[in-house]
Length: 83
Image (cartoon, rainbow, N blue to C red):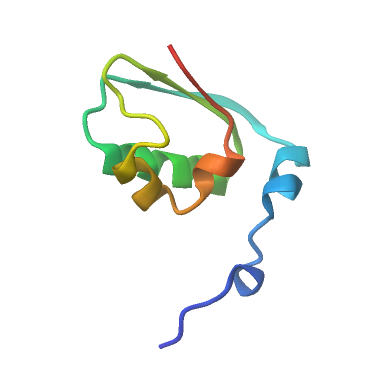
């Protein structure tokens, strides 16, 4: 088994992602305690090209260590805000 590169996966670059058409959906994360779960949502938002993520309450946000660990770079491409 071999790990595939981003080119082999046909993943968009950050610039291509920001210019691409987005699904008109915003994800609201309200008081999600786990940084790993937040990073997973960022990865899913990147995969489905959602418009953005809104984090509220005690939800950890980038550059939190656990969020960055599980987001695998999606925090650079997905638009997000903290309220």
